[in-house]
Length: 297
Image (cartoon, one colour):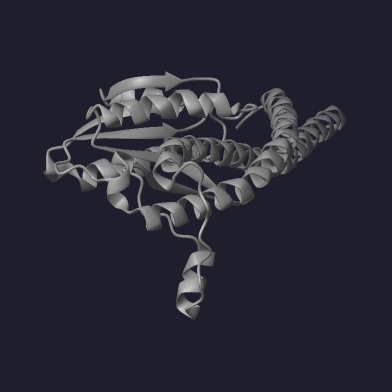
């Protein structure tokens, strides 16, 4: 049985751990507010951008731009894996890594060569452990204030590589922020750009309504040539914002659960300590009473 000193040391250690988890919870909550504000502010822009681009691409036709045309033979698949740089966020990183691993397992019989662009140390470390090819890595991005130039630089490399036939398909794995308690791992195709459909377009088509035709200057083809690469940049930037917000939410929930676990441990340890102390006092009293009786005898 543990001594009173051992129990006191355990109680002290759990209290220090609780202080750390509380502090990390507060830091995550503070960062979450900023990240969520940026993410929610960008969503309308991304949605309207996709709506206009989908309308232009539909009227121009698939053959107008090589970024819209699937490759005849798919051999090289590139995956942009967005994870966090730090841990202590529950199963957040594991879920994202498993999403990428599940896709690779699904395509195992197709004889594909996979390569990766990593945003975050956790994804990079997994790729190194599995001896997967890493073509580019970006550390210290997810979970911080993200600049659009970061996404644009990475996106331009992907577009150039796709145009040069280095990659036949490009996907991105990120965490979609659904709620504080729910972050959904998503695998989304970046290149070739899939048909872009919005809820507004689907509702209009179902109702038989006239879809507005955008007037383009100088031409639809020229505008698509500028907008399609930018669409890739926008999707990467949006994915990074979603992943950053999801990371802070996951860490906040994980630290909240850890704090609750510390409180439960403290209750149990305090109860054990009180019982042990009472047992020690009872034993001392018995010794005193026994000694007094012996002296009388």
